[in-house]
Length: 166
Image (cartoon, rainbow, N blue to C red; front, side, top):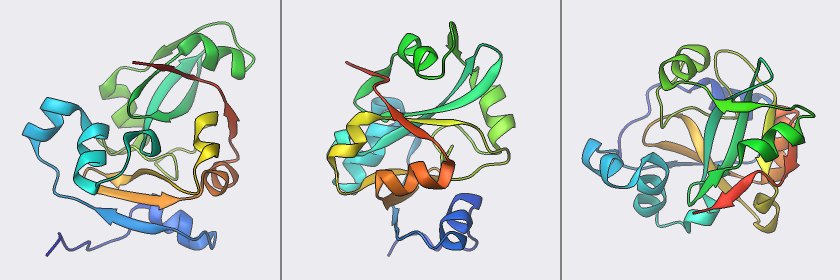
């Protein structure tokens, strides 16, 4: 039996409030699994989902503004492409401690669907090729499956080519 979810995360509350169809997916997060594979690949393997359909959320500073970049877990973020997609010149990953403080979630649990502070969101355009994608629901071991277009609508985000393959 999986872990009991005692309370909704802000991400799940946002999805429910917006009436967006989604499926909650849980797995047993382990420090060893995350250390060996990274949080995103750990989730993909534990859930039995193609890593190209599981997306990680990275917080980026783009010309002084915080932005969420959502890219497949088997890819890297192209910060130059993200800056360009935002109409900016420079972008850099936000230090993990700052991202955790701003989002209200720990690394590996930051969700594009809802955190402490709503941030502009850019989802890699590869998400559009799938009926559904999987993103963090606000906690390690707790993910949500939904359509990429619903995620973009919820976050008032946009699609752009922001990944580079590993």
